[in-house]
Image (cartoon, rainbow, N blue to C red; front, side, top):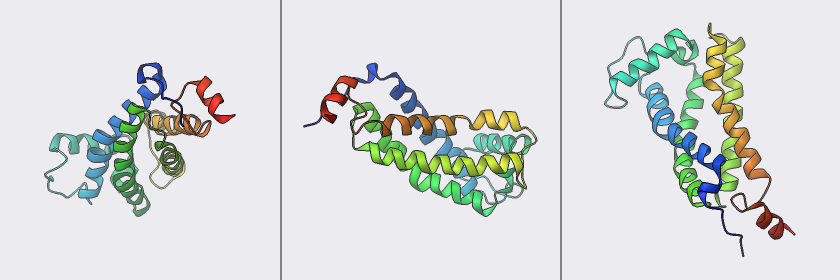
Length: 177
């Protein structure tokens, strides 16, 4: 028997995580990242059917002004984008549902997601700081990427501390004894 999940209203950290997952699913993964998969060369392309042209232009503006690696698109960068599109996107769908409903089965997948996300972000930030395509706007880019370091750490903490991450602390202790 498993403990009952706390109602979502009593899990404010989970509400923040759900919002983060929704933004990642609908904007980052399938607009920003997808743009980088469907447009190989941002200096010579035809607008795709998706993402919309205004959002393609926004991605290119950001890359040209703040984040040169986004425009350069080296092979290792595209690999992280494929991971995002093929693995993280579907994860976000399951995570949104599981976090809303308090489903413990998301725990293991969340730990994997957070670990891979932290690995990707570490590699990307190393490039941003010291790489061939280092940003001229380091503070701005670090600030823009902070959520992808902070939220995975929050998820690791939430999911690592209990096999019943959505239960009340009292129930977690009762079911661990």
